[in-house]
Image 1 (cartoon, helix red, strand yellow):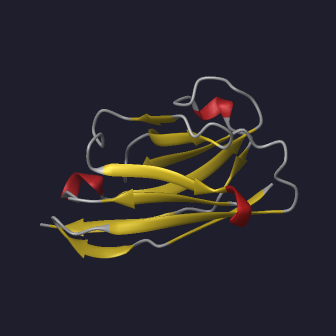
Image 2 (cartoon, rainbow, N blue to C red):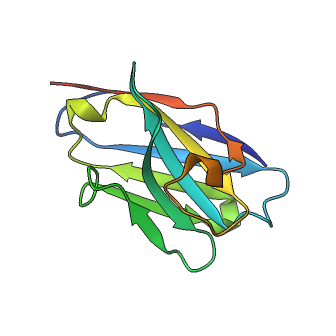
Length: 123
């Protein structure tokens, strides 16, 4: 699976952005799509995830109530709607796919990664 993330940009605090992640090649083994982010000098951290079948979602506490993860299986595309953005949301955002139902918040659960898209939130 090859993943292409897009939709990042420079916004002000309180604004919204929607990230997209399109999967190419064979996606029939993908059971979950996840979103992670990495700020400068920090480790990559879990943001949100959604199963491609039942649509079960998981969120990091820091984004609950502000971010919404979704997917369009027909388009092989996942989305991360980010509302009420804060400066601390500034990071490179990565999408990833998993072929196994393991811990959604673990980086090791994902076997394919997109290239990342920069999100910068100014105060």
